[in-house]
Length: 227
Image 1 (spheres, rainbow, N blue to C red):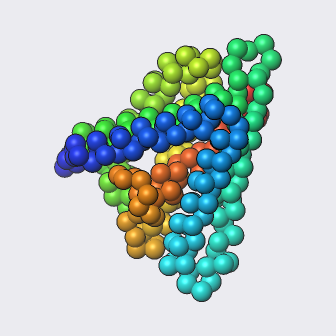
Image 2 (image 1 turned 135 degrees about the vertical axis):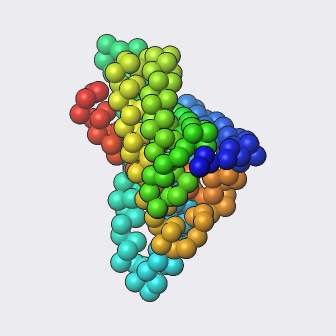
């Protein structure tokens, strides 16, 4: 059975996503300090919600399980700040420190939006019990459309088409696993959202779950193949 397309939910999610992109752009483009401050706030928010989930899941033993948060939350934030501080590539006309985080953020936003639209319109095959509303049609369609769109956006930002394809593919695939990981944590904790700060998207973890998992993989690609 096709999943009904909810225009009200879509409008709410789109508005929140648009605000998200504006905030990311401001943090990225103004200077390195605004980027650092922005992601310091995100870092704190993600940790706050993560610890609440872990307390529910692990009870008194939550301190032992919270160590995972260093890998799940802190490491990606540090790597994202490292990406922001990369210098301009020699013989190229773009600044990696500005372009790559922007391409990563755009890829995740486009993939999330396209996967939702495609899944809502033609989604038939559930992907996993962890996230019942996620379908294979939506997931695959989101990845493909993300890559196509990012080829054009990447070219406008100065990225080579191959790099745009790789960053979009890595971000979309890894981001999907990030979404599933956070859904698993919420399912284990018995909650719908990790928080309520972002209408249509829930809390910090709900919004940045994909970014947390995708960042280390994008950083690895940039470090080994783009510098």
